[in-house]
Amino acid sequence: MRVVLPTFEVYKSMRRAKYIYDPLTLAYHKVERTWKHLLRDTSLFLLGSMLMGLIFFFGIQYFMDSPEEKALKRQLEISEETYRELEEQIQELGAVAAELERRDNEVYRVILESEPPASWVRQSGLPLDADRYEKIRGLSNETLLDRSLRKVDDLKKRLAVHSASLDEVADLAQRKGEILKALPAIRPVKDQPSIRFSSGFGYRIDPIFKVSKLHQGVDFSAKQGTPIYATANGVIASNELYGGRGYGKHLTISHGYGYHTLYAHMSRVVRRKGQRVKRGDLIGYIGNTGKSTAPHLHYEVIYRGRRVNPINFFFNDLTPAEYNKLLAQAAANNQSFD
Image 1 (cartoon, rainbow, N blue to C red):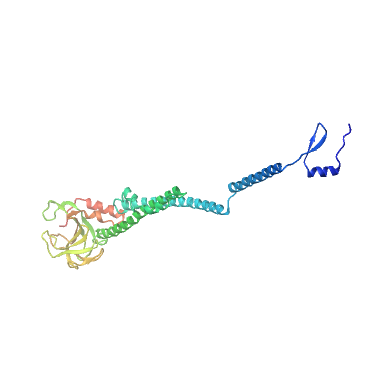
Image 2: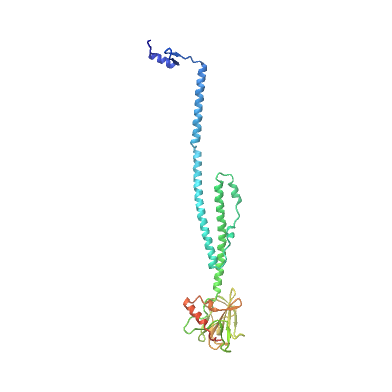
């Protein structure tokens, strides 16, 4: 059987119409297309196109950000980075505050000899600003903001307490300075070859009655007319020619904070009652008045009504070696001059 191949014109005609090849007859049969077939094919094409369009649209929406979304994401990244830096700074400030508190405590204990603020006082302070916390409720980064705000509030509390503590330290330091000025911290006579520490505080032989009696001060023997100086800031509390205890010409200085000093057996007093003096001011001259066996100064320190050893206060104008030498002289069990 001879097979007849279709010519070029036949192919052109077949492209315009739809044909189906029949293997039994070895021939093409034209498919008749009705309007139903056309409607079906058109509907399927449109439906497929719509489906592909939807897939493409939602794919873009899901996988690709709009310019607004990109800007918001960038802002969020910057915010998160800023918060991380803020957290680091808050931690650094917290460490600084802790170091300030430690130094503050040392200032109280060592320098001012006072108890520092209790830890619960440092943790108290300013009340929380509740409105600030309400404003962040419901925000996407509420947890991050809440944690940062609480750390900032904690720092505010600690720094507020520290600021008040600094004010108290300044006040205590000022008072401490006044107290130091009131301490009889120097010797009442200047160091000269003609001046000798002759008798210390404690039981000594009385030069008149020749019995052991409590010597309530220290004696400095020197030439008549040797200058005597105030050992601390204060006010002349008394200026007497003679007293009932055999002091002769003497004066007493009130230094405040419970301290008084007494200077006895003077030949001349150059300060009057009520006059203010400073440490190192001239107040009179050594003499031999009252119950005295030779020119000397009898010097006493009275603290809150009780006489104490003046040697314990001679720390402002002596080297350690000189002070130790003076202690050895004061410990000698000798005879006093009054």
